[in-house]
Image (tube, rainbow, N blue to C red):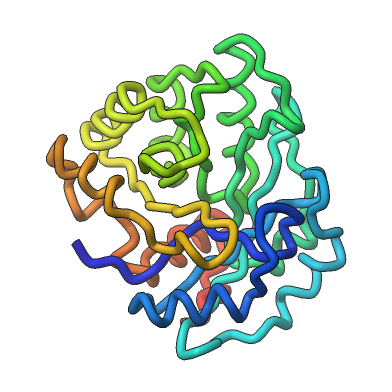
Length: 247
């Protein structure tokens, strides 16, 4: 399986677990043979995360570091059942894409209906192109409703290494994740592999995720990590602005 980019990484700007800078992440990505790297620091509601001004200025960030094309994104926090997130449209418009995720520090786990509605409503935001770690067992999610919505709204679902790897910090929910992936296979929904690496160490650490995908014969054509251009195109399609594609 070709892997040319990691869709989900964090620098020191995320406020916890690492002091690695953007340059450290890009250097690690270069050494691992990636052509592109998505840097998706936590949005402001996360404790210790960067303020709005940081994300507003990313549009002026260096586009290539150590030979790696940098894709500037954000991991947004879903705040409530309405799908509200913690950066405004004018800032999101200056980024290449956004992940939307549920985090226990911000979103208190509720009923399956409430949790699922929050993610589905976040998909209505045109700047959100990826749902992050939907398999997090902290939250009960209706995988059928989630995948139906992802198909309808053309949103990408993430396979997050931290919930699959033996060394991951998130509790495993492998049975649910396999069911979600089988639904994605049946409905032809795109997925993306994200390491969720806080710092450079775990960038592109996808071996366990790939084993999982191989075990259910998941079609490679639906895995976007081999085609960064297509990933960026799909994100741009969400906002109807193909001019944002830079690489």
